[in-house]
Structures are given as structure tokens and as C-alpha cells.
Length: 80
Image: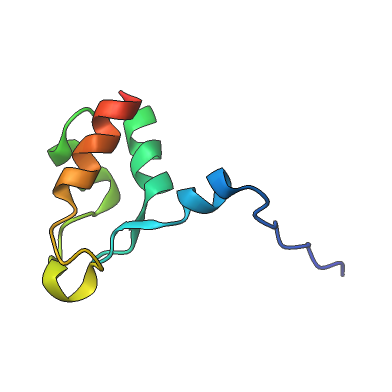
């Protein structure tokens, strides 16, 4: 049996796709962009698809100490 080689992230852009936007629910930038490309057009739709913002504890888990909603909205504007 042959083991598959792990895919290595090579570029800074690829690395950014794995960065958390929603730290509370461990939703990445790539997850959110995927939801947008899949048809999500609103914050509510992104939340429903990705699970972002369901277990909000932003003041403790997000390094910015604020809700990720604004960051998600910026991604919606950028990729819609």
C-alpha cells in the first residue's frame, strides 16, 4: 500500500486560504470564499453554509477581540 504525499502549501496566497476568519467556529477564508463562489450573497447565507458565527465567543477567541462579521462582509463584497 502506497501512502499519499501530503500536499504542501507553496505560496502566501495558498496559506491565506487556511487562515481563520471565524475563530470561534474554525471557519477559514477559503471556506467563506467557497461559499460565496457557491452562491452565497449575504452574511446570513455564508453563516448557513459555513457554520461561521454560530458559537460566538469573539472577545476570547478572535485575536482582534471583535466579531468576524465585518471581515466576512468584506470577503462577500470582494468576491461577489
